[in-house]
Length: 204
Ligand SMILES: [Zn+2]
Image (cartoon, rainbow, N blue to C red; front, side, top):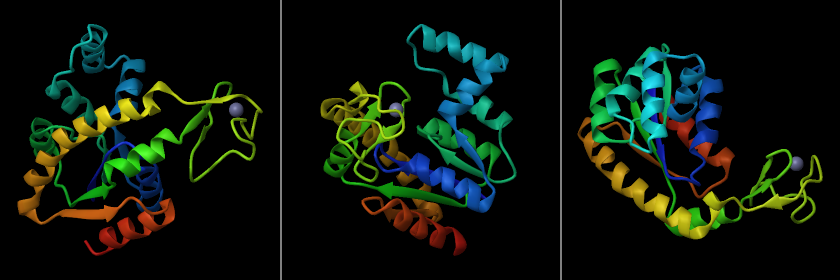
């Protein structure tokens, strides 16, 4: 089984991918993690990709696709890949996609959710609206000071959301003719979203 999860920042995509991985015994293909791991293992394609990153250049799709292909499991949950049409075409060469699940969240809700996020300076624990700290701006586990990451400032979030729409909407159109695209309301709780995603998968 191969599932693609699509969702903008704030949709809880990473959390859902983790839950799905455990429940259905799938391999979690998160390109960010995969690239970091492959660089650490000195994979030649990953090292080439690192050179692009260090020059501040966009990594070529074929390098990313090669790294993904080397790491595919029997069943996979794709999180952050494909990001472009070219990557989607490359993925079609290596796997049959059973479902594309879009975690839909209005931009305003994403901004609200993400800009409420605070991270601990000492232990990097993350707090948000679903998991607020017991005492405002103080970490529950280490009493460190909580702060707002630059990534979570509203203007940065808006920019990333715009990029997501630009990159992802064509992907939805790409998969739509196969009748494998499903949408889930990501404004709900983690548990409710997970239940909806599981219903989709069990109906496959
Ligand atoms: Zn802490």
